Figure 1 (cartoon, rainbow, N blue to C red):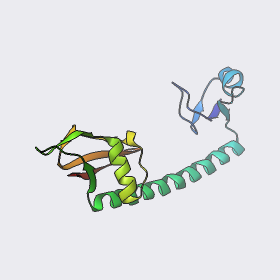
Figure 2 (spheres, rainbow, N blue to C red):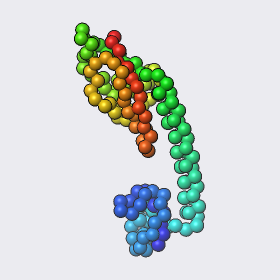
Figure 3 (tube, rainbow, N blue to C red):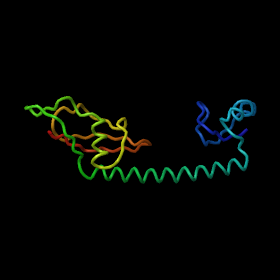
Figure 4 (cartoon, rainbow, N blue to C red):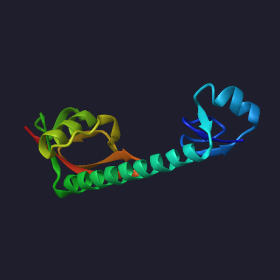
Length: 148
């Protein structure tokens, strides 16, 4: 029996996927548990419409991500830090400070968990951080640590 999965099922398939299963599995577990619907003509048509809408949303999201990437690459982000006499900063620069600097200087809200620093940043200078936007979209952003 062919069914359309409503949500991801381990070892079976992903949401909005058309799969073949045994009749009993579909009628006794998948359909009553609202994990899948029967793959009739009406449900296949709804699936096609959902896929078109999802494709449009993904295209719009990709365009927005590309816009953010171009803005982030225009100029380095400046992060102020308190320094000692030798040029070393007190503490280190964190992804939270970078996220706040991006919000303040570029106007985009980026979750600090998506920002990856290569090493600990404990001195003044220019560094690069990686921002992962998901779905394989990531970019390197340059930031400069300056003394306050």
